[in-house]
Image (tube, rainbow, N blue to C red; front, side, top):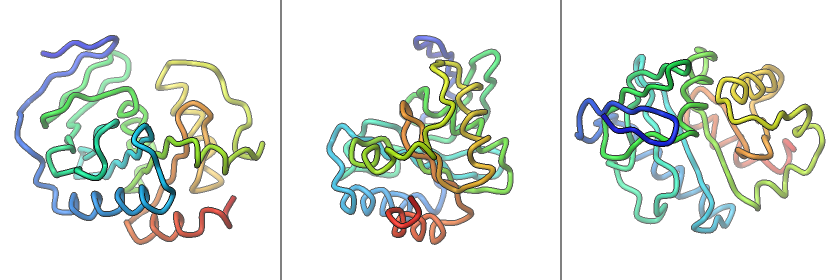
Length: 184
């Protein structure tokens, strides 16, 4: 068992996920990185449903050198007990709690993209995307706020956690990203 600040993580296995679209996810991450000129301090986090699990990349990794073992499979997460069950080489982080809650609440979506960047933040200085944000560290409250905003749009902006984009497949996500300036 691995214990970090506030979450317990139980690693079931150290093996790498064999989810077949991970190479496509890596390519999408690298395309976003180039298109929006992200810096090494920026984050692109993508989670995809894989049965009842989610496959998600870890934050703060070298995007140019990203590989398949930079993804973990989250088997289960209990937000009340703050307990992760996962497979992979890296440990879960706080962003993964938000992804897990949103992915399980919105069963009709398959992909959730989170972009944390100053460049993206500057695009979203519109009050339409920044309303009613509470200053909380509780992933349930943060996820509820994001989910509430996702009822009306596929794109949500949160000042602290960045932009969240939902979609059913990679093509839909790429179309939203290509038209991001127009959507805002």
